[in-house]
Amino acid sequence: MKIERLIGILAVLLQKEQVTAPYLAEKFEVSRRTISRDVESLCQAGIPIVTAQGKNGGISIMEGYRMDRTLLTSRDMQAILAGLRSLDSVSGTNRYRELMEKLSVGDSQILSSNNHIQIDLSSWYRSTLAPKIELIQDAIEQSRRITFTYISSRGESKRCVEPGLLVFQWASWYVWGYCLERKAFRLFKLNRLSELACTQEQFEPRPVPAPEFSEKPIFSGELKVKALFDPRARWRLVEEFGPDSFQEQEDGKLLFSFGFSDRENLFGWILSFGAQAELLEPEELRKELYRVLKGACRKYEDNKE
Image (tube, rainbow, N blue to C red; front, side, top):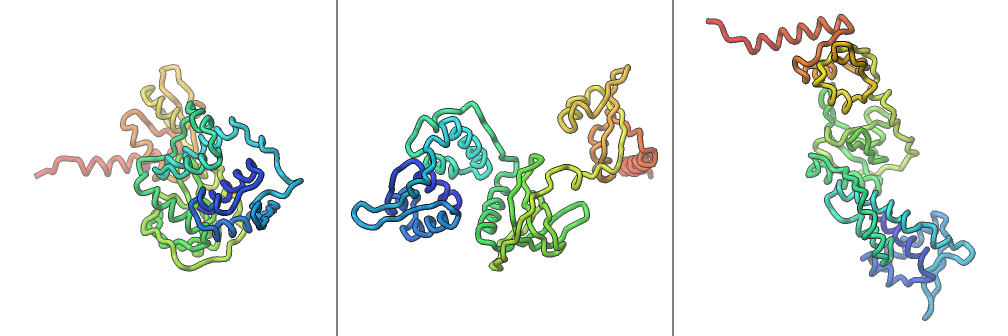
């Protein structure tokens, strides 16, 4: 992709006095014309690159503006490599490792070190997530709108979005973009997208505000809940809500307090514990859960002749 290639070209120029366009074209497996366009893009980004024609000509960063070649130490590069490996875990390819090889310019020590850090961003849905991520990346780079069917607690809806960012948050992947239906930026979970397509409609890139990463807008926590749990449920409470979400009682049971955004999620979560959980407050939800349980029990009762 273009951004990866630009980073790679810049890394090469920071470490070599001068290189030729054929050298860069071969290294990044593109045409010389593409390298010329990339050099122009770097210049537009404010990096003073000089091209000289003739026998001893080539491409270099303007003298006097050259950055210290030790700007990125081996340790820095190893940290970058750990991050790039994590992106390969999503796509199932070695694309980002190959980019790192180009950044390291033959320093095999960097690539063979720092194996004590392993970041795996893949999921059970890798086979379906990777194509979505690739498509959205391309759409963002080409400023093309995407369309999809989105499934939420309110049902299904058709959306047309101008994508701005791919976001990994709360152990899931999202696309942050301008929704033409809502006339505002929205966050969409990739696992909930179906019939995803990149259209031929290009859009004029607009300023992309930073996504709101706090839990408040998405998990409002309006329903303040208290529940009593069997000690055997401790591991789930710690894993899902943290060790401060409950207080151990004298009899060993766990008094849980937290805020939920809607009763459907609350009921589904409480019921997933079976007899290990009892909803205490609020009283009206306790009564409603009782009615839900009675309705469920009726479905399992033996039919009476």
